[in-house]
Length: 343
Image 1 (cartoon, helix red, strand yellow):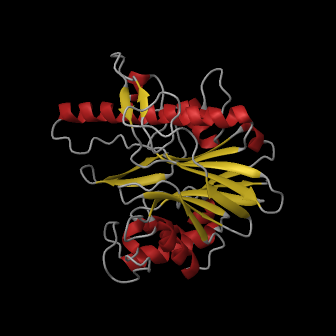
Image 2: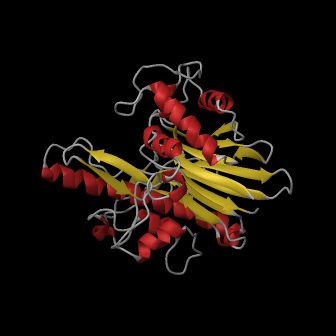
């Protein structure tokens, strides 16, 4: 049995210096009213409790000419004695929020395995490499949109050391639909629709890659933060479905499975699972949403895997363990999702 997790760590980058050393001090972290030492301590508690064999880290520390994602994450794992102590980075990005994999080298070998053709600025319509350009007409004006990932998904191939079995992972941080920068109601609407259009195109691109893997018969896990879900906002009606539904698979396609996503698709009202909790300053309340998923190919359903959202209030063990409950609230505005599976 192995445990695979996805965890969006809010402004993880702010907890390390340029050498990748942990900043365990009283300076403020990127989280409101949380010091770097407090956030690091909380993250140490959460990662230790997860005890995962592989963690897809969303918003991982920055990688550039002076900073190293791998160095920072491996220092973090060493500091807290994690089994998942080796780090893998795919295509770096310019947002200071990388996508990286922390994994247990005693269980897996792992390599970055990008698929698709490289593109120029004109792009291509057929599942280009994730650091390229995707041509797709979403607004039906006969002029293709040129779509890029601000955070290219991480494609990793995990090989189980014991059996040699390959499992392919795609770590995702899809486009946020929030209308950042809007100054009035009309601008809010315009940016929200534009951002949803880009997010949908990314999910169509991602689904093309999913089809490539499924056509080959690969064991596939797609996991991360989709900034989307069925019924999450009113603009979804303009497009007929959410990006998450596109990636899961539509009529006639081989479908991926995530129980929380399926529940959201089938039940648009009533209690829903959630993976993120944000403070809305203007309304003086918290907004909760289902944004983080672990989707698996049909063959991975055969061993009857078990999903869990480590929510500090909704998960009984998390709630009844005060140290873990408080750590989850301090560590990030997202909560981890895990998959326990016999590979």
